[in-house]
Image (cartoon, rainbow over all chains, first blue to last red; front, side, top):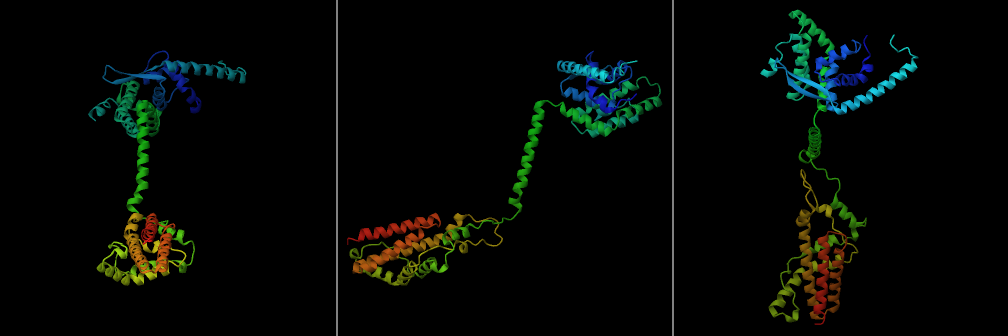
Length: 113
Length: 301
């Protein structure tokens, strides 16, 4: 099932930060992790991922570290910063509220079957 | 460029083309472009590493390119994001440089008309100065044309001679003084007649003609020196000649005529102390001072 892009746009930074909060990752690894951990429900467009990572880096919510792989390729590993963790906590709390509100609105119809 | 080409070597042609297109469209710093290219190549390599054949790699790469979407849009988004990553000092430097550049361009545009355009004189200050003094009065009330005529009628300049009391002169000096008075009599009579008129204003505008094709407005100082100074020199000649006549008449006992000429000088001085140029007003003061001194010094004699 594909999500509306606008619906996903708002939570994409939170999703990335949530995944990075468990450890540093590089771009491809991150997309795979998002798909695996959301049981393929959430898939971040590849064209969205890298601009999003650079934006989060500019906001200092994540930081990048370059490491040379065995094949000699330079790879950027992203990890969450302290500011990123604070932001994630706030956003998570808001999502929780949103979910409660939606549950009430839909009378429990949104709960997993 | 060799390094840049090497990093593409393990990729299928379509992925190679796609990434090159993205980084070319990005149009940002070379270092940043290379970083992005390496990251995208790594992504493709990771995604294609399990593919066994070239065909499979090609198909998988095409699928991935579809997921990445429009290369132009991706390039724009990455460029914007990378720009945001710049440190604060760089942002300040770029903004300041841009502001300075805009100001410089604006100033160049504004000042270009001084170099390529021709000046348009919007305010004729010479006319304004004339109007200030004339105040709409009829030209028949103006003493200035007659004063200028009196200057032109002066046949001998006697301003170089000392103004001595005739009683203190020897016979030769007396004869020379008499000769000067005779020569300039018509001019002095014209001055006496001119000064009967109640007002005096020069027509600055007629003197202040800007030659056709003149690129810049001549400064007022050059106008004063080229046009008005000779006139002021003429005033000086009239003054000296009139003083000589006052002394001569007083010496000969024609006191009434001497007083009339002295009054003429006072009126002449007052006519210059109006609203004209400052230098003209100063000349007016000097004429008045000379009229006073001629009377004060020689009156008792």
